[in-house]
Image (cartoon, rainbow, N blue to C red; front, side, top):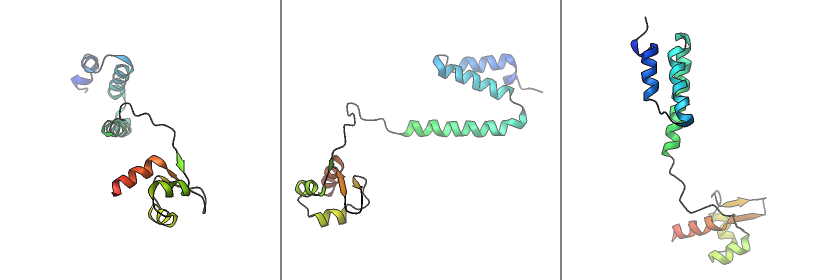
Length: 127
């Protein structure tokens, strides 16, 4: 026996309450129809896919929006000499205290570069 919500008239009511504009409305109607018409043995897999989609949508909603007007510009990389002049710290101090930080780029064992903006933010946070 089918429940009234899954009969064609009930399905039409549910589809009518779904968003009606654009591709989101079309997808919502297709989703409701797929749930209504799926064989009961396939419902657990369908529910898993729905839970995954819901988790993804929630994750996207909780990410803070990008700051308006701040387009990421080109990244300026500083060598050790430039970083030393900019910070007033010695090469040895910079190498010891910036190991593992995101703005430091270890190109090889002897070649290190620093993202200028990241280095300045880090120094400002330490002051």
